[in-house]
Amino acid sequence: MLTYNSKDLMHWNLFISLEDDLEKASKYIEFCLANEGAYSIELAKILMSASSEVDVVMKMIGNHYGKNLGGINEYRELAQEYFPEISKEMCRLPRFQMQFIPWENWNGDTNPFWWQGYNKVKHVRNIHYDKANLKNCINSVGALMIALVYYHKLTSGLSFKEVMELLTPSSRMYKMSEEYYYQLLRLS
Image (cartoon, rainbow, N blue to C red):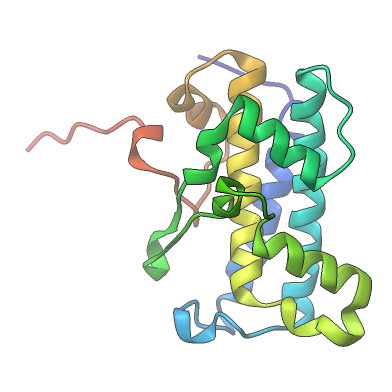
């Protein structure tokens, strides 16, 4: 069995904690397209924590490539050079029948809309508090999951499926594409 120590999983455990917070928020906000603009102080905390952690993980990926990256524009350039497929990675919230592609903007020269929202909430919250919304929040947490999966694949040399088995506890809300998971054979 593959194992990691607690230091290796520190960032994954933060993702799980943020996912728990998001799940608690789902008791008060119905996760659906009609409510994507709903915003709150709780969503602001989740958005800022998740996006800040994305920043940390992307810097770690850059360090792995021997690069000292200074911010989101440099993360985008790194991704476009080394792992451009990240811009097509889909996240799903099966419980809410939602799916999205958090890094989709990296197909071009713009940064993710949720990152732009995060920066507006972080720097001028008095004007852009409404950017601490459900859409930005679920995308930033999804982006964190994807970044972590890529990081662990890169640093472990394992396949995506093996990485998903390694990252425990498993995500309860978020799922990536089915090719990232081993399929269970059900016997009748």
